[in-house]
Image (tube, rainbow, N blue to C red):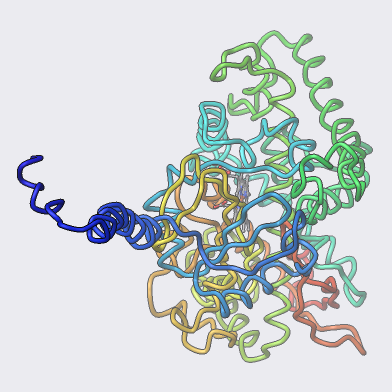
Amino acid sequence: MVTYWSWWWDVDNENDKLARTILTISVPILILLWYKLTVWYEGNRLPPGPYGLPVVSYLPFLGSNLHEIFTEMARKYGPIFSLRLGSKFHVVVNSMDLAKVVARDLDQTFANRSPPVTALTITYGALDIAWSNNNAHWRNMRKLLVSQVLSNANLDACQGFRINEVRATVSNVYAKMGTAVDINEIAFDTELNVVTNMLWGCSSFGEYFNGFREVEFKIIELLGAPNVSDFIPVLSWFDLQGRNREMRKQKEHLDRILDSIIEERIETNSRVMEGVVEEDGRKDFLQIMLELQGQKDGSTLFDIVHIKAMLFDILTASTDTTSTMVEWVITEILCNPSVKTKIQEELTEVVGMNNIVEESHIPKLKYLDAVVKETFRLHPPLPLLIQRCPDESCMVGGYEIPKGTIVYINVWAIHRDPKNWVDPLKFRPERFLNRKWDYNGNNLKFLPFGSGRRICPGLPLGEKMLMYILGSLLHSFEWILPKNEEFELSDVFGFVTKKRKPLVAIPSQRLPDATLYK
Ligand code: HEM
């Protein structure tokens, strides 16, 4: 080797020797630099995004309606961008192709969550399903919910609860005809009663549930509110905005409800040899969970706190989403008279004017189904889904996403992207009539329930309840806005993004036979 290179140093003056020494050292350095700047850097650069200030980074510049702000930022920075908020690195994915990479191709890598402080408080330290990381506990809880509550067999067995509650709602609305009715409130109560019946066998009425809706709304608001404690964790101890204190207050209320229900059941069980069972021999979900107490769940023992975390998840995940959607659908229908006419024509044809809506009619209500889907497209209740967090560094769209980054999939942007939808801002249910669309998240253009392993497990119940409540309210009543009330379509971002101004509407009798309302 030395002989091979000896010609290089075979020089007759000192200047030449110096030049060759400099060249010998600098050429490998330049090659290394080039490699770093091209191959290495290309493969490791972070997504583009705005600069911020020291310590707080972009935090002071972030507004409150995050889904709209992120969609606006995507126009400037592209389909994937990053922003640092305090010490936390965030990435927002805004296109269907990149959503596919996160939620499908790299689903396993992105299956963790990064719960905010308030979420840890209300879920007993992420012992629920929604905020738990992708671990044995999450898998067991999700499997339990899906197999015991949301299976086709259990949904069929619980049909009676849905019929009773939806009929009770129609009858309550009948009693309020001619007055302004809060649509979200009636849908919330209907869903809550169905779910509590499925969970522990009775409706939510009674002293326990006084004020539950307000508590839940506050919890949802706190879960979505920006909190300095999340962005600058060293300050979390001071809880500067008081958000965690407020969440603890809501948790006390929730705890009182859940403790009373669980204690009552334990007390009943102590008197009944076989534990509480339904007439058909089925056990409700609370009973099943109580019988699992003391069993190993991953590395921990399944106990009362786990049961409360599960109950919390199911109650909150099912009610606010469903009621918000019922409210949006009726708002869009009232804003679009031709859509209302088509829905009524379909209901008259499928159900008949001397009949009330039954679940068996639902598969035939194709136009109503398209209206619901179009409303989901324009008003997804979780427009950024629930944040995901990669458990190792990986590449998305040619950019590096470091381990632990908080990643949002911007469903709002995807659902309004002109590359995916013709006239994306127009309310046009017909676009969902021509092709087979579902909520399973396989077509990444449309993912109101999410996609991949974190997709909403409540989808079958959510879809059933939405169609049944809406079909019944729209078939049994004519709805109009109160005098001087204007159509209003603006929303306010939150963990569940809702209508800024709650919809109130006045019902009147639509079916000729008054006995159908009893
Ligand atoms: C209209 C009704 C509903 C909508 C629009 C909805 C939407 C969603 C969305 C978007 C997610 C997040 C998915 C993701 O992060 O990718 C989610 C998660 C979840 N939903 Fe729903 N949901 C509804 C009803 C329900 C119902 C009825 C239940 C339970 C009975 C439920 C239980 C859950 C749970 C437990 C999670 C967390 C899943 C996980 O992290 O593994 N949801 N839902």
